[in-house]
Amino acid sequence: MTPFDDIDIAENSFCLRDAQIHRAFLDSGDMPVEADDAVRCDVIVRGGRIEAILPSGDAVDPTLPIHDLAGRHIWPGLVDAHVHLDKCQAFPRLIGADGTFAGARDATTADREAYWSYEDLYRRMSFGLRAAYAHGVTATRTHLDSPEPQAEISWRVFRRLRDEWRGRIDLQAVAFVPLDVYGTPFGARLAQIAADAGGVLGAVTRSTHGLHGMPFEGFERLLDQLFGLAEAHDLDLDLHVDESGDPNARALAAVAEATIRHGYEGRVTCGHCCSLAVQPEEAAARTIARVAEAEISVITLPVVNMYLQDRTPGRSPRWRGVPPVAELSAAGVSVAVAGDNCRDAFYAYGDHDLFDTFRQAVRILQLDNPVGDAPALVTSVPAGIMRLPDQGTLRVGGRADFNLFNARNLNELLSRPQGDRILVRGGLRVRPRLPEYSELDPPRDHAPIQTIRTETVE
Ligand SMILES: [Zn+2]
Image (cartoon, rainbow, N blue to C red; front, side, top):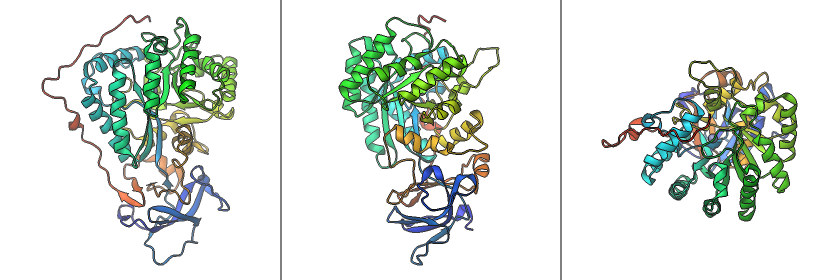
């Protein structure tokens, strides 16, 4: 068994002997699936691509360097399908973020209006991508706050970063605005911006100054306008829905009806969907059935929503903030786990580490005993949502992009933070460094801003 620290893959042709790969990541064919739903195998890599995955002991090619993994687990690159790179890393300069949803919304608006220049966005979004890459992420979808005039700046930064990161991280973006924006002339312009950039159209199912669950004028009509724009530009939709513990927040059901009405089955993703967990069982079951029928994918953001939901100063939280993932999965709904916010007004912590999110998700959502297909929630399922069939799997002919863990079973994998994970990209070991926080230090003339509380009805 090669000591973990000594595994040094310096040539892009080699054999990994006695690896374990979870069945969520590969077509196991005739290979026996053993404990923890993993396959014990040898992996031959030639020229940076996977040439063969064979039952353990079968790979014999004396010309190749051999790395004996002694049953350690290999994962594909991680796929983080819901993040907010434009908000990330602003925490040190925020004032007024009190940890609540309304406080976060207002602190973010104030921060955006004061600071979100091209340079500021590029610096913080690059920081986020470098951290994600260092933690093993190979594809990510970011929502971009896209009100007028911010959208033009943010989408330009996104296009530059997508080009710069091509080959390391597949980067996608979603136009993110409160739904009422689609009732203004800028709605059509925003759809055009997203279409021109090859992006995804999106919205949050609340009004600009409102909270999830508050009814507002023209909700159904605005949803139809959004779907109409998506159809006109042939764009997928990715929405923020019911991010609330208010049992009256029922936008998910309305989005499912709109999806079916517009014949948009299989093209809509809904993030958060927290309030589904606090609705009467029968109402929730009805909604889940319609979501399944509409072929809507759901993304849960367990770390951020456990932190953010049910937060009232002086009162302890009573629920976990996550949707009923087991019931959604049982109904046939594709569910992914993603990272969401990172060091911003909505979530004060984090390091763009989707594996850490997965470890926490297993605990928060009780995805264990058995873990089953849960590893797919941060790999192949989000890759499907992002329409990236080469991501989130390990297959013959595919690029040799591995995350290699010093763990021989899922318990070892989930018990430690795996800070020493080894990244192999295109068949070579890469050693990216995490960016230094000091890179985000503000210029000297940078004054803190005051949070603006605007017309909030609470
Ligand atoms: Zn989000």
